[in-house]
Amino acid sequence: MREHIPFLDLKDVNARQRDELIAAFTEVLDAGWFIHGKQCEAFEAEFAAYCEAKHCVSVSNGLDALHLILRAMSIGPGDEVIVPSNTFIATWLAVSFAGATPVPVEPREDTCNLDPELIAAAITPRTRAIIPVHLYGQPADMDPILEIARRHGLKVIEDAAQSHGARYHGKRTGSLADAAAFSFYPGKNLGALGDGGAVTTSDPELAQRVRMLSNYGSRKKYVHEAAGFNARLDEVQAALLRVKLRQLDADNAIRQRLVGIYTQELASLPLTLQAAPQGIESVWHLFTIRHPERDHLQAELSTMGVGTAIHYPTSPHRQGAYAATALGKLALPISDRIHAETLSLPLSPVHTEKEVLQVAEAVQRAVVKIGATDC
Ligand SMILES: *Cc1c(COP(=O)(O)O)cnc(C)c1O
Image (cartoon, rainbow, N blue to C red):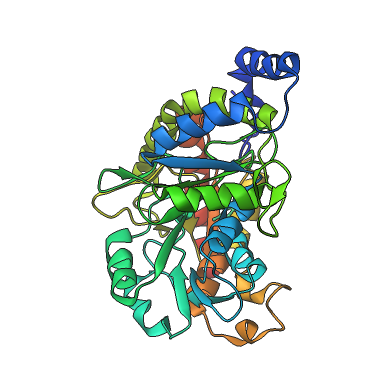
């Protein structure tokens, strides 16, 4: 049993597939082909099938996946894109890089995902798209979002960077809207051993445009039809991701089982857990709890040998990229509250039930202690 329970240990996560990963690397080394080859092609086919989407284009990372989708949809200067007020900043930055303006909409307090009821009020004649984020691995409430988008002629882009394998009314994220962006950052549910990303869509033209833009604006070698980017996945990462994709469903099932234990053990404590609505199957990229004295709780857990993390400490509109702009002056109290109160507990496919029970017990002791000093 580990004395210190880490928040996440990627060395242990990947050690389970060590031999297969080394074999995959060796295959690429021996093939001597490193960009856009057989491994990318095979991974794209396998990941598209996994997501129940018709097409997958592998790209360099999740931020580029979002950015390229927006570019491929010709969304740019003068356009507005609705984004959640609480998300990892990449969702906003992708919109900014495309030259468009992110328009934040607050989440529901219970699910922490975009509140469909607040979207209509944010739509203007300049609005072109909505980017719901499947935060912490839980699909956003897509049906009402897609309905509003349809009524106003808007595109819907899933930010699926945290939701590989999650389902909304039986359908996988990545197949729920016009296009989806995935990240394979090492700590994600499907993580590379470096950076990686993908776009999934069932629109063949959009897929081709994303592919073209990701490869110097070129469909044919040395013919550059647009000012594109170098945003490709490499063969080594594609080969490693193919190995890890084989493990993804089993890993997600472990996360779901461990979260079942957390939920049961923490139910009676004065904490807020992410609500899990009917018809939604989260893959629990993160298991978060909310407490008004989050920083105090984190410090107490740390002294008890429990590693935690904060996703995320600051709302995007308060970050340096936006604080001095008009966005920085917005009042987004729900997002601010979520950022101030949320703490992520240890969770990964190599954490054990026993460790989760230990963490839950530590949380209980810490919460009681904090409660006592409050009075
Ligand atoms: C990780 C993440 C991204 C960005 O992915 P990178 O591969 O790090 O560029 C985008 N959106 C969300 C919600 C994320 O969690």
